[in-house]
Length: 313
Ligand SMILES: Nc1ncnc2c1ncn2[C@@H]1O[C@H](COP(=O)(O)OP(=O)(O)OP(=O)(O)O)[C@@H](O)[C@H]1O
Ligand SMILES: CC(C)(CO)[C@@H](O)C(=O)[O-]
Ligand code: BAL
Image (cartoon, rainbow, N blue to C red; front, top):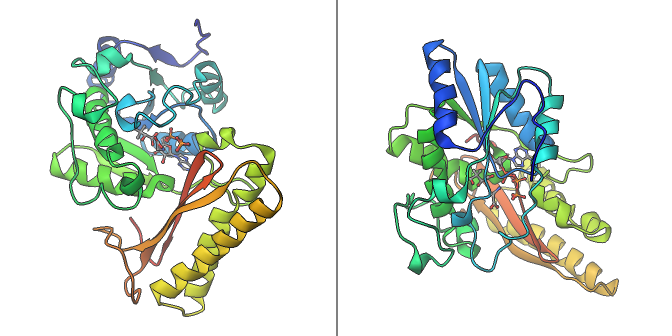
């Protein structure tokens, strides 16, 4: 498919070509901010690009639907691929905001090949132990291994001074911060706030999968999270009670969908309160703030969201 590259943006498909461009920035003593994405860009991604541009001379993005973070049962084949739209959205941010976009080939990113079945994989992988198997890692056991691996590859390729991630994927932020520290990447990690639709739904590329009816019910994630936040602000510190209120609220939404005779289901995956730092579950008193997070299946689409209460990442 041929794309029309807007003026001011350099589009690279080959790692060597990107590196040549990057090398010149270094020689010119210009700093580079990096925003990793899987494309299907929305306002959430664009806010990361704007934050990067505030701190760095140039901003580069990667657009790469990374096979290693998808299970064989997940949506690798159908994940939205909208390169022309993505480039147009970046151009609309203004001239000299996004300088470069790298869209590499799977074969070049994974020289040893990449099977979705982990037992058949060959090559080099990065695992961040202790942070990858709770929360998202329960339903997606190999997900963070895939994410950490591809982000490590990209940090080596892009060699940015700073990298920008969204708080929407809060566990991903924890995993990557730890990887950057453990592997001594000389790169500053920035975590940017979650961009939301007017009613509060966290923006996500996967929202495009929702039907109008599902979109209406998808607000339950934000409703449950903000209800917990309000109760906490009113003085409730018992994590179990807070989780019970939230799961009841999501269950009522499930029943509502059912009673409307829908041909799809709303199903809670998890609602959890965890300690910042090690992501250990908090089941009794919240003492030093917490990460409150949830994942809900709205039909076949799995949505995630979180709020931080009295803590930062
Ligand atoms: N609503 C948002 N606000 C801020 N950052 C976001 C938002 N949504 C995604 N991001 C961030 O953008 C980066 C790229 O994410 P990605 O391309 O997977 O988009 P996504 O919308 O999260 O997609 P998906 O629907 O697959 O989860 C990640 O750092 C992610 O946290
Ligand atoms: C960080 C990332 C681009 C790695 O593929 C992906 O997990 C994402 O888009 O959040
Ligand atoms: N935003 C995280 C990418 C994924 O769900 O695969």
